[in-house]
Image 1 (tube, rainbow, N blue to C red):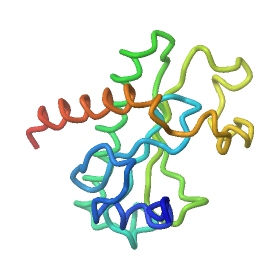
Image 2 (image 1 turned 120 degrees about the vertical axis):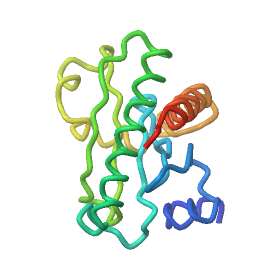
Image 3 (image 1 turned 135 degrees about the horizontal axis):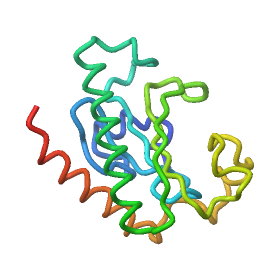
Length: 161
C-alpha cells in the first residue's frame, strides 16, 4: 500500500518512512500537512506513539515538545513571510479531538483568506478544503517545504539549550 504511513504516522516517522517529515526535533517530528489550503500548514508529531495528550509525557519531555512546537511555529512563520507578502501570523493548537495521538497544528494565516474566515478558527473552513485534491500536498509545495526545512535547520543551529 503506497500510503500505509498514513495509518501510523508516528511509527512510520520513527522508522524513516513518513514522507511528510521535515526534520526530527527533540521530542517529535516536524511534518508538512497533507492539505495545503493554507500554504505552510505543518504538524508536530510527538515521538511517543502511545502519548495521547500532553500530560501523558513526563514534564521534561512535555517541555521539550512545547519547545519544538514553538520552533516549528517560528520556522513556518519565517518561511511563509519570505514566500508570501500577505502572510499575517501563525496559529498554534494542540487539540486531539480526531486523532488520538499527541500532535500540534501550526496554521499560517494570510490576508488573502476570505473575509468571513480570516479572523476565525481554521476549522470553520468548508469540509471540501480538507479533502479536495487541489489542496493536497504535492510537488507544487516543494519550495515551501524546503523553506520550512531551512528555517528549522537555522533555528536548531541557534538552539544552545
